[in-house]
Length: 57
Image (tube, rainbow, N blue to C red; front, side, top):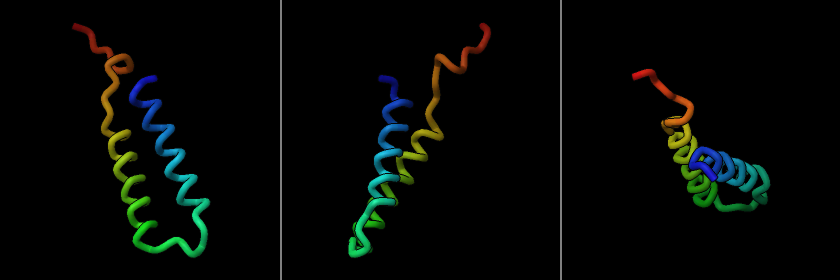
């Protein structure tokens, strides 16, 4: 599995965890989950795919 696929899967799981969190989830825990989602999103946005970005020599 490519790193892009892994990140997309992890982002999906993180979003689901945040969306499905019980109402009584501590604010600190939600903040950590949101930071994790942000970090994964940034990594995905900055990912460089050699296969997709073939430049002529």
